[in-house]
Amino acid sequence: MTLSVKKLHSSLGAEVSGIDLHASVDDATKAALSSLMAEHLVLVLRDQFFTPSQYLAVADAFGTLMRQHYSQHNMADYPDIGIILHRDGQKPASMWHTDHTNRERPPKATLLYGLTVPKEGGETSIASMRAAYASLTAEEQRYLDTLTTLNSIDAHRTDVLAEDREKYGKPVVHPLIRTHPEHGSKAIYFHITKALKIEGMTRDESQALMQDLLERTITPENTYTHCWRKGDLMIMDNRATMHRAHGDYDRSQDRELWRLIVQGDRPYQQ
Ligand SMILES: [Fe+2]
Image (cartoon, rainbow, N blue to C red; front, side):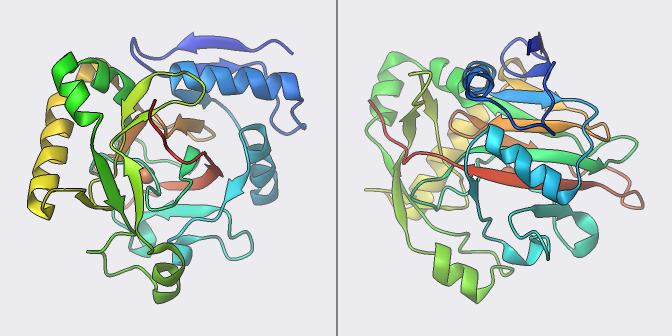
């Protein structure tokens, strides 16, 4: 099997072809995908068509499935698949974030499959937080390296089910700057609404620091915006990216993405 790779943006993102994810993927191909993801941070495969059970099997090429914590949006018969769909009342996750940082071992990757996409709008933007960190002065990097966040399931959201809050609400500490376990580089790492605070700061100080970092470090130069086509499969490396959804599409049209997350390591810094 020969994988071919075409860059999608100067900073991150690559379109990958030459792999059939309906077949089981051998260890050499898994290793190749893993290093491509560590390097490019976003992988896109076009023209994929999966049933729910086929889609679940795809995750095996990237790791071990994790259950997602907004369980009311998980597919009834296939609860490891999260359904992203505005028609059921969900709001697009329009602020920059990385997924499920309230978990002790947050997902190393998120997979999104474009089942139905609007004619225009509804893109997903992904920023390289590796490039964002690299853009800072050495002095600021040294300061940020010392900070840790305390994270829990979104405290302000009213749509968190009691059972999910019970299972996933225990606060967990992560470094604000994490080292990528395969690439060895550092990246800015937080989910601003899941971070209750930066340890040693008030909540307001913490929010201000994180908001300022997002505003200063995420730029067009380190952001790839994915325009969805039906059948796209996108894999994002959560250890060194943040993403946001664009809600600017005609709501009379459908936009349905299926999401999977795969287990990562406990974030660390070295
Ligand atoms: Fe997300």
